[in-house]
Image (cartoon, rainbow, N blue to C red; front, top):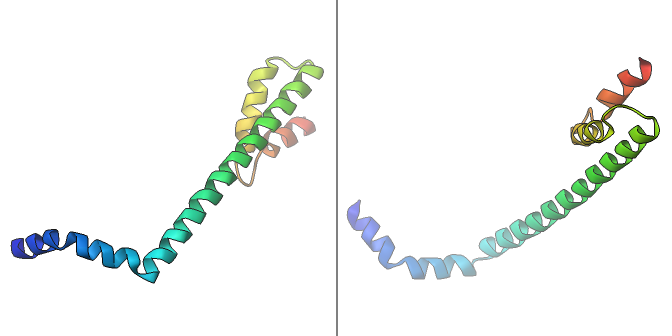
Length: 97
């Protein structure tokens, strides 16, 4: 086992060169780069939407003269990040009450 490890260390550069020129490696690299870019763009857009929702809620709460509008608006922005329930989990019962 020690001999195999030493031989792999000696041939590391050759193996790395063979791996980097293989088509599988290039396709994997392109896929991962696209995923990183797309995921980053998604998070940026989601952040902007959450910020907009928070601002709209704060302004609405100020117009309705609700206590602690900034704190409640930030809370609504955080709840809006929940995938299925979102802000509706707060607004629907509040509207019924």
